[in-house]
Image (cartoon, rainbow, N blue to C red; front, side, top):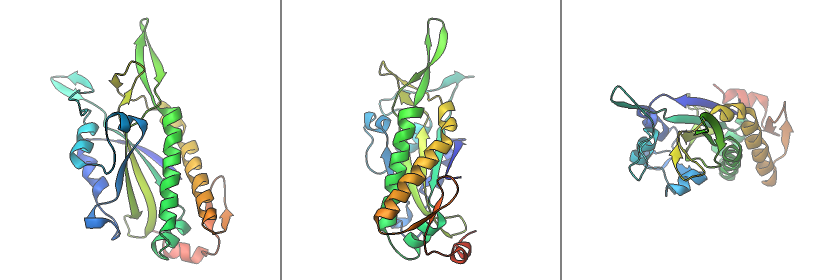
Length: 232
């Protein structure tokens, strides 16, 4: 899959997103950044801080507000969702093995474009109106992005974990939990937009590409044997 979506079980998983899986990460910390209109509205810019990240996963807003439902004296709050976007293997090889760091910038731009699509079309909450619960589009997400450059097997694999927090701001300015159904429904579209934008970026750098099924592609000239050699 070009893009995968998985629910985050607990904020205790947060530390794994910071673990550097490649030697390019300064100080052993993977590059990170806040993205989305929701993050801006919360005053979050630049690198993702560990404490703020875990607080938001727990539903704690910077102003002290707590999201979630109280059950048996404890707060129950779903932390969020990890939308991971992965580059084609040939792009990872040319970026990490051949050393063309411009491809990493192209990857980052493609991720940002795909997340913008998700924010416009999947950001929503559920509100009660006239005795019924309705879906309300919000158009804002708070997203913590962490870029990794290798797979768990230490093969070159450029990918970004985009942690969408379970919070969004409604039309009245109140922060509410996110309704994720549309996010899952748009999974293929999000992945396709990422891959299409990356292909445009790769070609703009002077590479030729070979198109595959749907939006898949590889950089022309990177042989299948080389791809297999650097695959898990």
